[in-house]
Length: 484
Image (cartoon, rainbow, N blue to C red; front, side):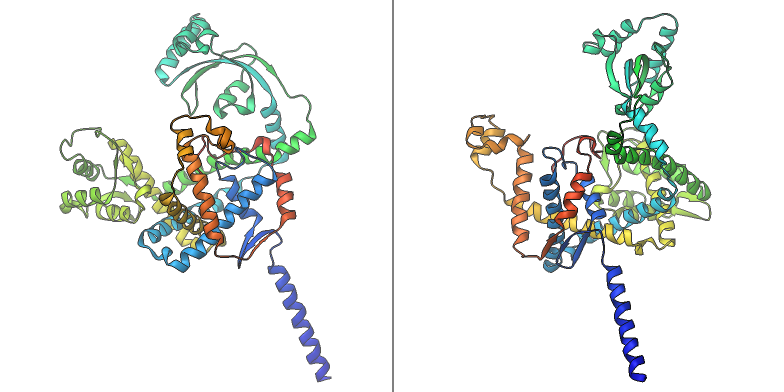
């Protein structure tokens, strides 16, 4: 009987262990590099933030190349750890800074993203909006006073055509009365599109502010999307969902920060701030604009510290139940990587930068209180950051040693197009810098693969992901081409 019980116990332990192992094995694994598992969610974050992904090539081959770029980063971190690069003091400073940013991002996710709901009805409404076409014309000015003056003139009988000649000078828009032609509503700036939606045919809007400037808009005609093409709707579904999420996220983030800061009520101490500005604009403290933008580098911090030595313990910011002194602010700046430190040219710009620093420090305190440095998503983002930094270290090693062939230099610098006959692959590159980065990436790839890592790629999942991507309507995080 005891033997049977023992046997039953062993069987149960084996079953439980097997279930545990089965549960721990990720079902969304798309690749493995040695012991590093790459999930589909990680890979999606990677390619969605790559400004060059899907620019010159699309489809399965482009997706597989992107996965190989991710794998190279994973290998680079292993190489960097073996060679001691990750112990470098500058690397550690960058790591600490990124940890703070990852904690802030997680705080936003918990306080904002969890509250975002996007019902399908809202996505369908966005689909109608995105595919409705409008025929509009507009007047544009950077200056709000100018656009308000034109609006008053329109109300008094001035024609759109005459004002367009003033607004657009010698462009096509000056000759056609600011006519933008037929455009999709979903392709317009959100504020611009919102104003157009409120108009009836031939109605003129009051001044509208967008991220570009100020507009007066006239709706000339409209073609609404009457029928829903279900296949087209589902193809655009994810892109539309993401756009709606981004808009709601921005609004809720603003509400969360406003509410959080209201509780602590941080206020600048004007007298200390003026002393700080005087220490920076030492030669002419009354000057309200420096000759060129300044960066709070170590030299400027040391100079300000010396000039303000008797005021270092004066409060720069007063808040409910606390303060931040001038000394604490300057010391905090030293802990920030040089490329992330404040840049400014005027007192207002400096004041805004201090406000951002205080805001982030207070939010970081809340993130620490919640223990977000131990959150799995934060740890994952830190892993990705370390991989990226390690990869760029080795990429720059290749860039520094790269010799550009004469035929490449002749094509890009001397504009010798005959090189295309001998080297047709040059046609896909827009600049010498782009070719240089591509070549360095190829060399770094070969160098990293010399470590002979054990690589597994789930080809089936990769092909399914390729079919899932809406290559025609990808949301890009960047508006311009950048070296990858």
